[in-house]
Image (cartoon, rainbow, N blue to C red):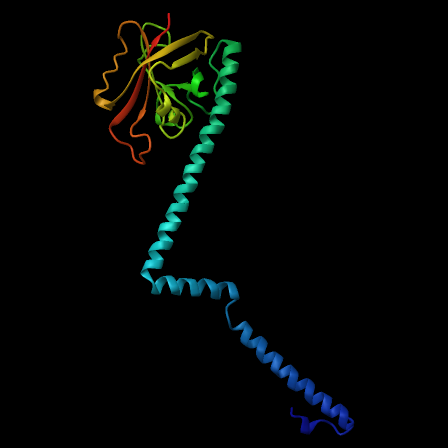
Length: 241
């Protein structure tokens, strides 16, 4: 209804006010209708970003690479955190094994248990080792290879671990270093490093029945590689009598 049809019972000033109210309301209503028909600022920003990426292949590739990098970085952090937390639980289980004299699982669903504590005093480094060297076991700590001797017994005792977590310190081990091993039965032994070498996994020459009492620590090589290869870093140490 236009202002010309406003009842004459209203004073001129009142009729003028009604006209202004209706005009103002109409403008506000149109603004609200326009706003309802448009996407929010957040969606408009995302749409504009997508259009820029779509129109620029280089930017799209850069965005994809950045996303992949962030995912890879996150996975790396997760692996390190998992390895660290696992070692805390393994240390507690190992101490319980020393007290009880029987194997103690680090968590209820574990299919392995801690068997030894490995330490290199000069480097202030070490780890709790698990029974067996399956992929699942190596995710939490070094593994004692089945079929090799117990540390300190006659023959060769072999431990393996990942190069980027529990055996990352092997890069700093040199000939003459002392590796201390404490077994879950409480017996402790010291081994002196005699050799460090690189060899293929299928030509490592690790004989579990070699004469004397020996210890071997092994991990993938090169230590800074991102993919698994055939080469292994092997550190061999002889029992100190």
